[in-house]
Image 1 (cartoon, one colour):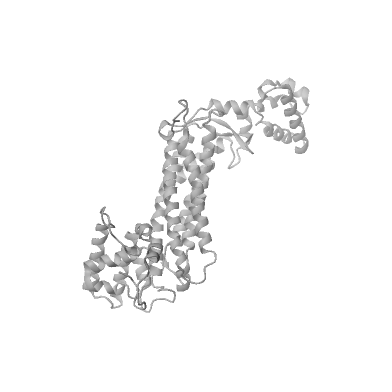
Image 2 (cartoon, rainbow, N blue to C red):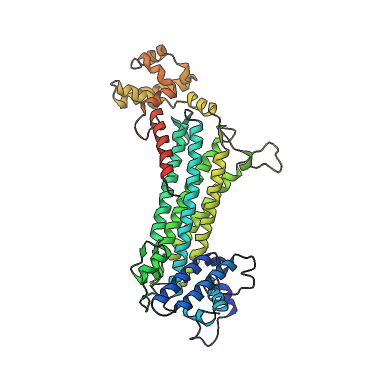
Length: 460
């Protein structure tokens, strides 16, 4: 069965049929195609195309098709061009001649847009729920070690000491923005395209606001030509997926490094790691490596649709059929990665002594010393030079911060008064960073409590 054909003397060739078919991937839209068609049947009753009896017959048939679609053999032997054609064929088998009326005043162009928007709304909500779980796991892990000190890095070199919860809260902020991005993507998709026709608007006086209310949309689209060629909402969703995957990939990279023998900060659970077929001692962070790898796949999904859309003329073009595979794949890969990340975080244990020793043995206190000099009246540029020479002397002599006494420091530079020796302990310098957003103990405790409170207010 075709939704078109009267103008043609013969049907499409076999090669074209195979090349252009999309049922194998767009069939996941079947529920939304049915829900949208049921709403459209109700709209057709309002304008007199369907009687109340016909509308009820069609809606009931759609319910039966939806139930049937959940059985294993529903698609067996189906040769339909796409999910929309399949649904109409099934409707004809169940409802008879009245099925021919369901497409009155409706184009497949707007139908595809509707189905995708309905699907995307649910995906955004599901992904937000999974992000919520990841953020909760991060806070749990932060609260287990509230006073742990780790080196913070720039250029992968030890830079300044920070608290472990401060580090994890950085990822909490990233995932919070991701959660908000999916909310934004959902809002932009949540407008009704039905009534736009193929590109010029429907020739029937459909009550678009009523249809929007029926399907839970916040409003209706405003230009029928725009709707026909619009995939911005899909790009918004793919962008949100891509940024989230990048954040997951960065977290994965950190945990891979910090769980290595060279760092030894973290221990990953057996349930999220694997071994080697040859080397008995190995405990590999495969789950994290897969997350890191899948980020490239999702970036590719966004790039694919961007390139597909970049040169299309107004309005609909068949190129746009290529929007669904990257859309579905990105959602699937992100969903799996979020579930995996949540499991990894839950399994992770921190060995606080290792990062604390790394902080104490390095010169992450250098900035604390320079700023203390500045607070005591030494111009910061001069303070920077004094501390730089102090670090250089220590490196040459093989001395760690703890090897210096107050007397030795004052002999090196008279600006170092006796109280400066306390700043050689990374925990002491943190106390000067109580500014909101800083790593001071009080600031971090406040931020952690605020994050927990904020998480409780998110709608999932």
